[in-house]
Image 1 (tube, rainbow, N blue to C red):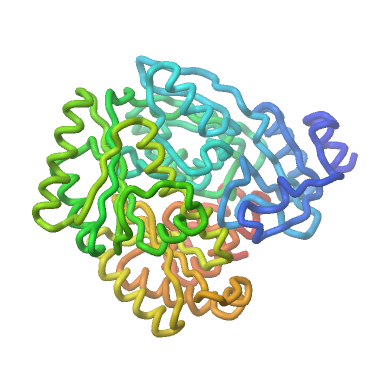
Image 2: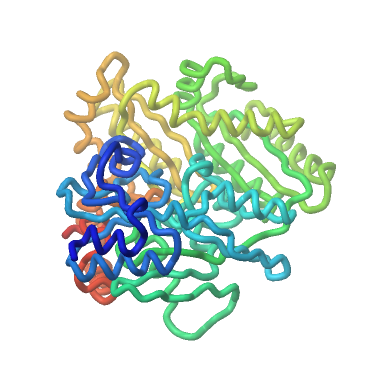
Length: 468
């Protein structure tokens, strides 16, 4: 029996795609990587996933797991060999259980993030993971990349929101680790090995996730600031005044919002242009009046002390959504402006002002007129530090000529400030060589040992994360 026949026997002929337009599976979100799969296989249950893995093992074929295909580092599309099997989890869509007393929800890997959020909200609970792609990204992909998003400051990354996993291993066995326990000290934490492994160790098929009580009130504001030092000072004040109720703290430089003004002029911007703008949000479990009093007192004191120069507080849910829409439109405005060199980096919050100042200066010295789109999750030290070509220079030509040098300047600065070259997007194919150069030999050796132990034949997502 051929591999294709074996796969059809496992999941049904209709769920093994080999012909027609498969670009939805073979082309990555950024249109940077295009592969060619032997077949796109869409199992509908954990048992079918296990059968697909066993079929690939029998025929010596490698396998690429894929969720919503919204990744940004080329980790979930096949190579161009035409020999890899792409395993899509999109048919694994069941919400298996919601335990309101234990504050957990158990869902399959193909559940779209927004579907999980809505299921929690229907029980008057909160699943706090929130991303720009939440209408199409899936839980399995969120966990495989340890996704971050806008509320990491309060609730943590996807790792912190996951209590248990169900995983199909390299030999086609199923590990059922769907525990809803907060405490389980019975050996190695297998869950944490698979979270963030980018599909290189196993196929996540289901997860038990943390839920939280829904806040009574949520306050959102924009604040204009003269410098990144002022943004960090405002963050420290907000943390001291609001404590755990501070759920979001996003920073945007002037050029990033200028791009939004240029390409989306219909979006109102309530504050005049400023060197830096912060979008902050707080959740309150007491009352809206309590939340507003704390929020406005914080901003008034910051204004009096010269930390901020202006502020606008949302007066309704619609206004709050409009403020977030400004922040979420920055990547779209960048795309309209042209190709750019993207960096998803993290630096200790205390070092961010020095990192931004020195790296801005180094890039301007190397490439006069270069435009910097600097925005991200200041509250947890994660910046999207993107480099746009000088005005009038075609983006494609800029990338071809300068990407390697720009990456070197940025990543050297990141390492010098004690940071990481990947904060929330992962490594995939995009950064695997950088990882090999910048991760310690000891760490890389341990990672390779784990890969060898869990996937000894290298069939899961080869060529991603670790250099072959």
